[in-house]
Image 1: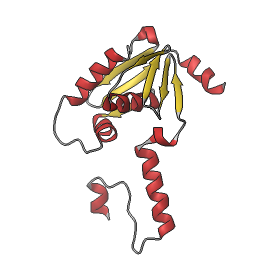
Image 2: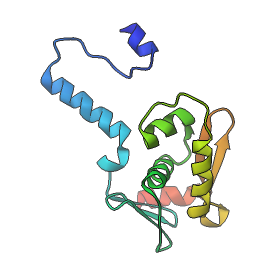
Image 3: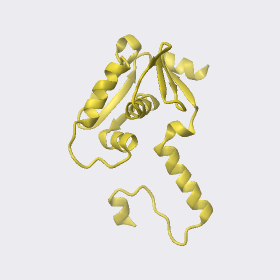
Image 4: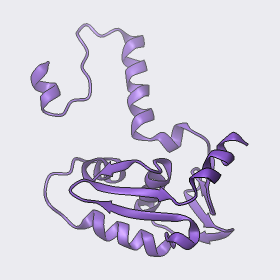
Amino acid sequence: MMRALSYGADDYMTLPARPFEFRARVRALLRRAYPERHGAARFDCGPYHFDTRRQLVTLRGNPIHLSGTQYRLASLFFSNIGRVLSRDHIFAMVWGREFREFTRTIDSHVSRLRVLLAIDPQNDFRLQPVYKSGYRLLYLRPGEAEQQKAA
């Protein structure tokens, strides 16, 4: 058990597994792995509107054409505003596998996403690298975000 957890396992179960507990644990893992599928079908972040069912993003009503990978990356950042997302976490959530070697894939996709979504102070967001960690999407008008949540 300790070896499995130290090698990266998230959880463990003793045998024999109870079916209802097993199903509940699988559902919990799926909620963490794919939060957009278990939340609202649509969500707004400042001038951005996300339709998770159609995997469509609009900026002030104008559709932005993204690939599936770009949409998953954008959805991950906008679902975790203000949180530092490690490269390992980003790779696992977007590409669905473990990050094992050094690659510039994430940096290239983030750079392209900044351009496609016009993530800049004019649109109230900044996507910043976090040294030796990953990336963080910042909302530059936090008072308005709290008001939107309360409404």
